[in-house]
Figure 1 (tube, rainbow, N blue to C red):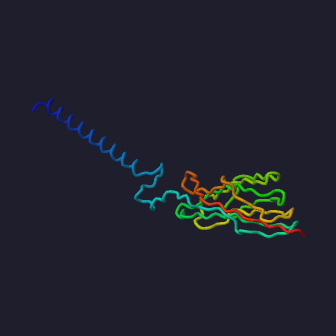
Figure 2 (cartoon, rainbow, N blue to C red):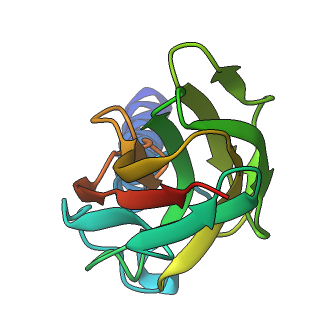
Length: 196
């Protein structure tokens, strides 16, 4: 076999090996990209099980169904969240949009309850009887019934059956990286204010 043939055979073998190596590298990289989820560097087989989809059955409510006060007194209502079935990817953000009767009560302040923190100062409209405030939890979540914030009121007029309600804008978001809102039920409270 002459030298030219040997050189062609060697070159052909080297070319085939290079093509096989490039193909193998491409397959390995493609497989890697398939097992990585959303840019995470942890392969799927090294993770805990993926959280279930967000379930729309969380609830917002107050610590009391009914409050009795006397004109001139202060009283509190604590807003709470029940994550419902969202116990793996719990609640990490809550928006409170609360309405109340401004002719008989005044909202003095809103105080977050740890681990919740305010995202910004509450927007209180004393004339309309509304408050809007957002809360979040920094690198965590709640997976059981939890207090979100204390609403401090001042009773300024007599009333029977005045209400403090969550508007439909009040909602809770699960810790799924998307801010998926999951509140199904919103239960307000009644306030009875007696004359002194």
